[in-house]
Structures are given as structure tokens and as C-alpha cells.
Length: 282
Ligand code: 0VO
Image (cartoon, rainbow, N blue to C red; front, side, top):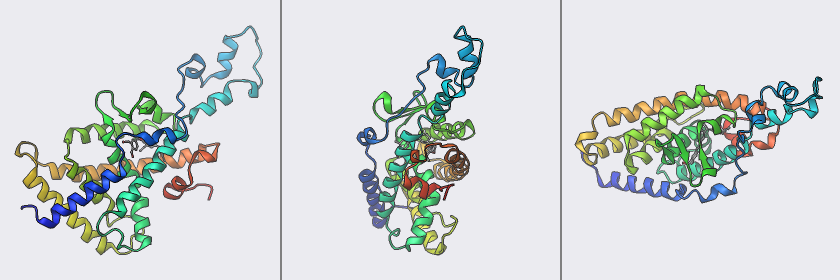
């Protein structure tokens, strides 16, 4: 198969849509609530035994009053990265919406279907687009300075657990190894969005039509643009990534629900996040 002029235009449109909505200088990150990381102090490392800690560190032989102990500071420290990462993900959702609106066929769907597709795929597209900042050097998402370098431990301080983070980092590493062209990267995000089997989608046929057009364009692109030596199975590997994203999405939903219930400060979660991922208090 060879690339038709129309398919070339589609790819150019998607690349432009992505460039307009992905700022690779990460200059907006300083507007989020600041990241708060455990300082690595003994109090912090032993945050799980504040009473033992205070008895060992003083001549007192009585338990401190609960309110005077480190218990609250420790508990408060648990979700210390939540405000920053919640702001980052909320910001990313806004960018994903901007990207979606520029994909031919999206605006022609009814608003209800647009919402269903975005709600279901937002975290998957964020995982995909975040691969751009992911580095195999130290398995982190490096978005400029050290302040905006996110490692597994940082995401754990937002309340996530290894059941998500271990497969998530593996996913990022394997994505990185695919070494996708920009055209392939943006097509994959668009294909992910136009999944007809998402909950609540009414006009499944329209969504499927657009998705098939995108996948046909991806197949044609790989066949005629990707170097012979590395295109083997590339399309199949990319489709496999969509399956892995479904399972990451499912685990993220579970952990998000737990985090949103654990969060003492409900303001930690921006309204857009609550709307897209769910609001347990609503
Ligand atoms: C976006 C990143 C994101 C996750 C799990 C890195 C969730 C975080 C928070 C996570 C895990 C919540 C609540 C972009 C970049 C980097 C730059 O490429 C650009 O859009 O963000 C990460 C997010 C690791 C890294 C949000 O779950 C509801 C705690 C998917």
C-alpha cells in the first residue's frame, strides 16, 4: 500500500494538532501547585512509626499526645505530590481535548459521544503523550529541571501503588524502544481516542469508521516510510500497546478512586479531574 494524498494531509493535520497542544519546553509546569517531595529526613523515612520515633528520640517514656506527634505530619506527607500531579494531569486533559478537537471527524460526533470518548481515553492518551518526556536514562519523566523530574517514588507520594507503576514504567520503556516516528505517535493517540467500544458511545459505527481510516493510514505509513529493518511487526506491536493501555487504565481507575477517597483536602483534586475520572463525593 502507498500513502494517498489524503492520508498525507491527515498525518500533517495530526502532527500540527499535537505540536499546538504539547509544549516540549514544559514552561507551564511552574504554574501548577508546587511538587512536595518527602525530604528524606529520618522523620520522613520513619513516618509510619511516629510514636516509636519520638520515644526513641527523647527522654520521655510517655506517648506524646496524638495531635502533638508526627502522625498528622506523616499522614499529610503521604499525598504530598498529589496537588502537583493532579494539576499536571488536569492540564494534560485540557491539552488532550484541544488535540481531539483538531482530529478530522471528532467535532462531527455529538457532544455526548465526544465526552464518552474523552472520559474513557484521557488517561491512556496522557500515558502515551508522556512518553515524550520519559527517559530510559533513569526511568523518569523529565520535564525540565529536577523539580519537574518525576520518578516512581514521586508518583507513589501522590498515592499510586506499584501494581500500576511497575507495568506503567515497563510500558514507557517498551514504547521508547519502539522508537516511533512523530506520525506514528500521533496516529496511535488518535486511534486510541476513536475506540468504538468505550462505555456510553452511541454512534459506534461513525467512531469505528474514523478509527479504521486512522489505522489504514498507520499501516500505509509504516509500509512505505518506516525503514525495512525495523518495520517488522511494528503495526502489531502498536496494536498490542492499545491493549496494555486498557489494563493500565483499569488499574489507574481503581487507584484513583482510592486516592480520591483518601484525600483529606478535597481541593487537591481540580474540578476537571473530578469530572473526567469521577467524584466519589458527588
Ligand atoms: C503528562 C506526565 C504526564 C499517573 C498515572 C507524567 C497519574 C498521576 C496522578 C502518572 C504517572 C493522578 C492522581 C505529561 C507529561 C508527563 C510530559 O510528557 C504531558 O501531558 O505524569 C505521570 C502521571 C506517572 C507520570 C491523576 O492519577 C488523576 C494522583 C498514569
